[in-house]
Length: 276
Length: 276
Image 1 (cartoon, rainbow over the protein chains, first blue to last red):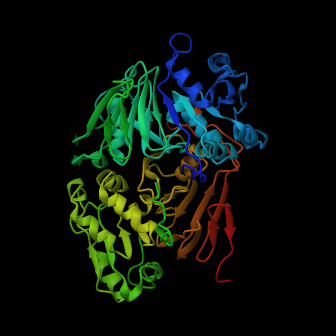
Image 2: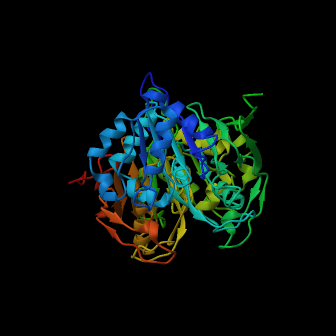
Image 3: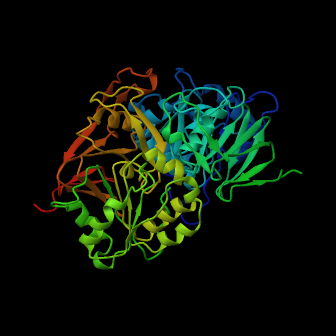
């Protein structure tokens, strides 16, 4: 579902974040997002649709404004499907230089925005160069294939992960968040085993996976990004299981990467720490 | 995930079929597939991966050969993930003029072929003009977003549909099959409500939805294709439900189309019967 890139443009970076982003101390991810969005010239739009809170998203205004030096940071009031069908909001996305998707419930995000002009406007903005960041539910929602929910645990079992169609800014990865803290390896391996075309990215809290237009991913922040590559799976029985049954899966490749390390999502190869 | 179309080429038609295809009487769908594949000059490859039967796919050889007049119809022995990682089979897909995906279990199809050179070869063949047909599980597997399973019934309930990432020949539709016979309206509406970007296609048995490179769909066969358009949904609560709870969904558009009628998957508009 990614929009085609217009001639002469470069697709904007994606910055999915594993939740619990540090907003007040070292703020590595805030810094990176504000720099990508254009610093003092940034026009940042916060999309609070995933949040169930009436003021969801407002907590980022001062943070992004303070870091970037720009006063053009605001929340687009998209809290229901009726809001998303209102054509006035579409134009504002057209003028943004950075888009941020809050946490909350990723299925609310797609159920409210899917098939509306807002979703199309976000995809087109990214295709013409606008960076898009999202934390927690906002990170999950970015890709075409989204983990809508599931159970925790390290061992893959059938029925421990539910997929839903996401926003479609990238179609090669499936993103999970709060990864280490919530023990989500089992559900990410299960997700990848359903179709090993997908590369699993398990994002720890306060950690982001920056994906550029060449499909190169770099880790930003204080935790790890766990990469699950299933293309080497030589045997799996996920299609034969009943809900709750443990899966047999042979040959998954796992890479646990910290800040500065990266991964080529086309070649499926680790990229050494850019800073070393 | 659809591959880019090479310059000077036109993407091949997709022909998802709702199962229980008539192979011996009027054979409307067999005729159409064989014509799309090139008639007497066709080189048809049958991919039996979804099937759990040791000889799955062989029942189509005489049918396609008899109809097309071509003797170049064979089954590619892709029954496990190890088969799919064997590079010899890739070249055969490169020479096909028509590809047919059998029924069986769509999650077996994606778990075995996902992330292998075979899946890439099928996407590339379609992008350069080769028609791809699939029946039952083979129909479900064609799109980027695949219904892997679910419960029957007419009323949408949370948890009645399971998604998995499909082969990705099209990313605008989600396909269900044996639609009327197995009472699958509830699960198709639930699937669309998760992200109303997707257009639901519910295919009756012995009925196909032919999708061309302009995203125009035409009904072929003796049953109906039910189109579920969720872009007009003004309210839904699917993100707030627990498994088994009934959903409230307001404003779904439904079109029930028979042979000759069509639907524009970009404009979301019905196309009048081409034969009337």
